[in-house]
Length: 223
Length: 223
DNA sequence: GAGTTACGCTACGAGCCGTAGCGAAAGAGC
DNA sequence: GCTCTTTCGCTACGGCTCGTAGCGTAACTC
Image (tube, rainbow over all chains, first blue to last red):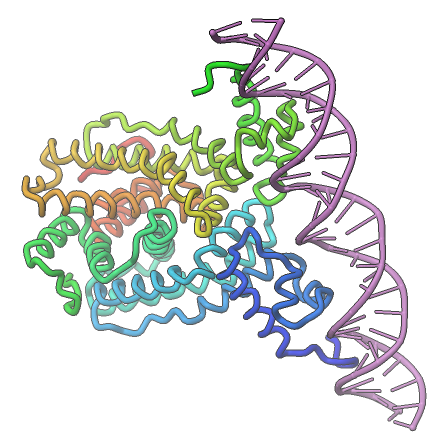
């Protein structure tokens, strides 16, 4: 690459991404302008354009960094793992900067193939890895049946992981952004019951919780 | 209201909404401008601003009309009902005008309370009614347990409907727009198995389908 | 007719976009 | 030291879009 010449100011990258995030919080996606971000970051507008081609990619990078925080520690059971990642993901989406930016870039990506690939690489693939990890752990614990070793088995495993991913991420995103309701412990537990045990199990879970009067905030749902 | 004076041109409303939808297909949300829509509709830009305050509300109305197509005919079983509505919703979201517009307006709504209410009224509430209808039908068929008649029962029913709604709509939206994969019969059937019977049932469903070599495109999933 | 409202058209200031051109700064290689 | 290369901040620009104001005309009610 370029080893000669004046090196790029690495601090400027962080300053720009920080400025982008805080600008998202203040004015949202629609009224976010490159000029404002540059001013906030204490950087010339031209510098900004030298590093990002347009607003879409800049904002994507700014929010993608936040997704790196997502972890999947072994919480001992499939239910606990699901509940944990749902809560984490819900908290992440509840932040105003991700709220306004994530759907906007996805919307733009329907007319921008390069952006679509960038989203897939920076966000989707990383989340999907968590799903696969959780699935394998559950299989190792005997909570889920094993896949066969042949080609059909691998294919089935992949389709299964895709499905789980869309259901978990989709439900959390929809509840947070469309329904506008919080992803709290109670919801996470009911959702987990639904995912693992299906509709009847979820309805049973709700009934149990209602009977207890106050939802027990500590105990994790059981399989 | 105003019964005197020159009446509004009703055809212009349709022409503007049509122009908005076709413009969404061609240029997407980001590059859609009020000027272009007006020109396409054969209408003065000022006329457009007399009816809609901004791009957000115009686009929302243009796509909200498409959601009226969603129906929930009685298909005989809970599984068939879910599968049917998933396919319908998937097809709706696969259209380029909804694809690019829906997430964009939701993104904008995080910083525009009026828009949020408008989305809720024009889209969310109507979809949710379908969920409640399907749930009541399933309970009448004995496929799902009944809710108790007291206040706790009503509350549980409402929470349950919200959960189902977020899971169904969220999963379809996420698969279509984020994962970028089609909502076909095979996926709809597996998703339905997951929703009704939980993860083990879904994995079993995938295995059965794989064993059959070619997925059976006709038979609806069983409870 | 008179009164009222919608329409098309033009024009406008304001703001943002993305780029070009400049001189200065900061490093690498000799 | 010196030269070469790249990045930096700054200014300026044409082009586009926004949302509004002003005007004369059209359509309808009373």
